[in-house]
Image (cartoon, rainbow, N blue to C red):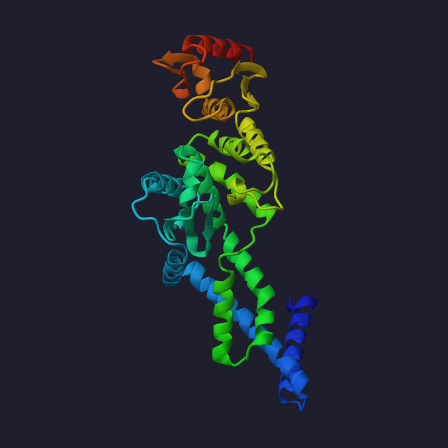
Amino acid sequence: MKYVKPLHVWKKKITVALSAWVLAALLTADIPAAEASILGTVIAGVQASHQIDQQVKYLDETEEGRQELFQYYKKELGVVHESPYEAVTRRAIDRLTQGIAQTEPTILDKPFLWFINPDKSFNAFCSMGHIMSINHGFYDYIQNEDEIAVVLGHEMAHGMKRHSARGMRKKLNATIGTALVAESISGGVLTNVVMNVVYKNIMNVQITGKQEWEADALALEYIMAAGYNPGAAPAVWQRFIEKAGDNRQNTVAEILNPANHASNGERKEKYIQTIKKMSGNKVDLVGNEVRVGGKALLRPEPAGGMSSAERACFVFGNLASAFKSGHNKAGAHVEGNTVYLGSQPIIACTNGDESTSVIADRLNSLLTLK
């Protein structure tokens, strides 16, 4: 049977042929200077768009480009050498990398490059090329390694999904026209215009709300694959709420909270519902009360620099992990000052908490009622 090309294929070929013919006609026609200038700008715009794609690909995907961009950021932002938080950051990134590699081994081909900068505000970002920078002020708010891993995992998710590269292409294509109108469009100058626009906008790429939700979800997967407590995810947002309130944009939460996105409380609740589902809906967290089978298990006291509500997030995460892995079938027991469910530690009791034996007995009774 003779193959007949589909209509859409013919349409595409005809369109391409006509476009080429029209462009050739325009280039050879005797047209006024003003129109010629406009046409030249349009042609330069097409060339610039191609150069943008090539430049973004160079910085995002090649090792030479990544290293060039890495040095650019360090020069622009500065580097804190011998930071007391460098070791915990390196450990978290290494663990996250190995966790991510279980399902996305390409990360090993393009490992994340990172540095701590001296800015005292609370922020961090991941740019093209898997490059991360963490403000030193970040550690004034978060020092717990599990919570640090949540934030780093969120930024690494942006990198793995190439959110910055996509945002950069979109932003540059939207702004390059203005630069072309204002500049000469000769080949050498065109390259300079593109490069100027790239570096002018490289620190200001907009991440969408949808991309933030995606990074939130992946951060939870990443920290669990790395062996961190999933309860650290809602704990981060609980800490933000206590430090800066439940608004959508503020000094503390700007790291993960653009103006067009959900509030701190909404993002915490999203994590709680995800972790609850992970436990088979057997474990829940309401305020600072951890529940099993819909019944109250405990309300931890503030300890270790954490509020009762933040600490409850970690207990909640431990319990959900126990149910997910089946450790709940072994029952609760006490070792030293820690209550275990099977081999999963649930809570290390401190002064003010109920006794380990009371918590373990109550947990066992709730397990029989679930």
